[in-house]
Length: 192
Image 1 (tube, one colour):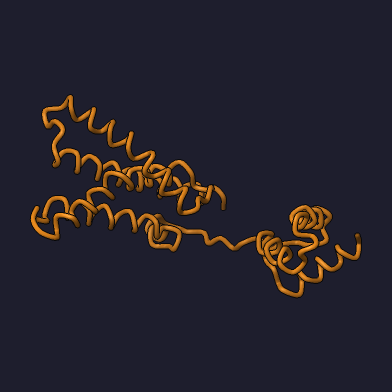
Image 2 (cartoon, rainbow, N blue to C red):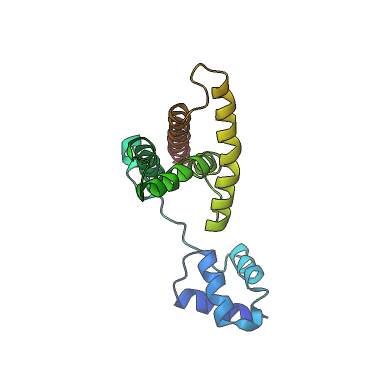
């Protein structure tokens, strides 16, 4: 067994594998005999101090403005531009011809995806979802959010019409997204 440990250590060091995930993926391919136990072996080697993985370098941001324009906030700009363009299409595109379908597409994204996506980003800053989970959760959360907005608008003088619903959904998306960014920034400031 010590031979297998030395083989694993040598493979990790020779290939400059910086993270546990990289090491496990590489070792599962290189040593198919250990495929089931690679994670356990790597964890044991790490706990015994025989291998040390580099800690990822995390940049500290001094201002919220700098944080808004970093690579981690690409999701925010995606949500912002998609919400603005969806609102633009809902109000300014005429309801005839081909553009009617474009209007329906962007309106559906505004109502069925963006509220849930923004809420997911607000509630989970560490968990990584794959694309199918993210879309399913976003749609699943957007439906009750928009339904609740409609229910609340029913008891206002504006009622349930296109303009109030669009503005309320757009405003909620921006509030959730901005809150998620500020929460992440404050958590980042507390870490360092």
